[in-house]
Length: 268
Image 1 (cartoon, rainbow, N blue to C red):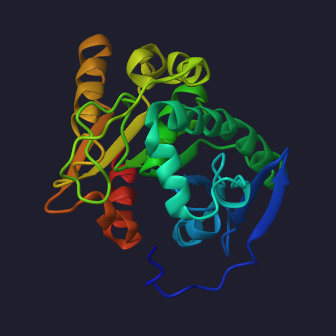
Image 2 (cartoon, one colour; image 1 turned 30 degrees about the horizontal axis):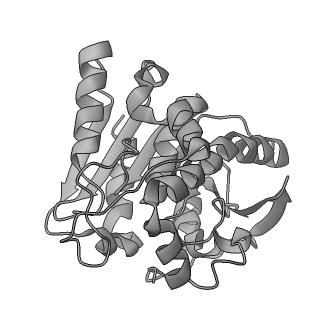
C-alpha cells in the first residue's frame, strides 16, 4: 500500500501519545531539532503508515509528527470493518460523509501542534505536508493556524465540491458526490478554502503537487484557487507542479513526490 523503500536511518524511538483523544505519532531527529514537520496521511491510511514520511522529515532535522485523521487508523468506527466497507459507506454519499472528516481533522491540527511545541519545547514556523485527503486538510489547517508557513499539498484540492471528480478505481466514471446534510454543510461553510480566500491573504507558501493523469482529484481546483489569490492579493506564493503520466494511486509511493515536495518548500 505504501512505500518504505528508502533505507531507515538510526533514529530515536517514535513517540506515541494520546492528545485529548487524538492518537499522535512523533519521530524525533537523531541530531539537532530545527522545527516541526506535520504530515496528514491519505484517506484510509494511519499515522503508522505515515512513519516513512516522518523519517524523511527527521533526516532533514525536523520533528516528524502525524496523527490519525478522524475515523481513520485507531479512530476507525465499528461500522468500517475494513477499507472496502468504509469506502462503500463514504462514497455512497461523499459530501455528507467526507466533509466532516475533512473539517474535524483540520480543526484538530492546532491541538496537535500545541502538544508538539510544548512536549519538545520548540517554537518555530511549522512545515506541513498532506497526501490526498491529507492535502485537502492541510490547505484548511494553513488558513486557520498561521504557525504553518509552508505546505506541500500532494494530490490534494482546496475545493471541497470537487466538480467533475471521477471514481478512484477506474478514474473514468464521474462520481455522484451526493448531498450534504446540516452537519456536513456546517463544516463546508466554515472551512472550505475556496470560499474563505481571506485566510490566505498573508501569503503562506503552498506547493500543490498533482498527477498529470489524475482524474479523481480535479486539478482545476488548485488552479482556480491560485488564480483567485493572485487576483485578490497579488500573491506569488502558490505553485502547481504536475508529475507527467501519474494517476492518483501512483502517489502511494512516497519517493515519487517527496523530493519534489522538499524542493518546492525550500525554494522560498
